[in-house]
Length: 114
Image (tube, rainbow, N blue to C red):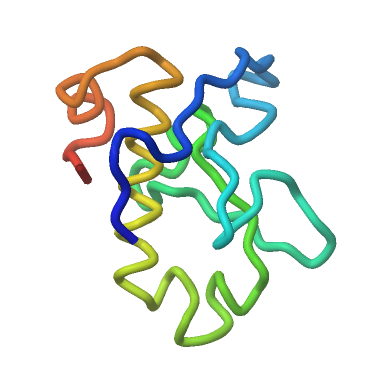
């Protein structure tokens, strides 16, 4: 799942905040996930743990079928390649959407995934 600078990263219009959180995901659409809720979907925060609330606030979340989230061995929580890909795409999306650098991302999220 290698990406280069020509892949999928287009600026999206600024989206309104609700209670300090993004109303919608800033992640690009992908065959692996949706950026919009669908019936039965599980919401996954791209950067979890201590960064879960920051991911919510910044719009870094996706919607997955249950088996692609945590209901099978292929789900993002059990599939390192899938998780690494989501982290990479999430960091790229964040840097582009907020017009920030890799160093800015590290200050906010603790490390780089690029």
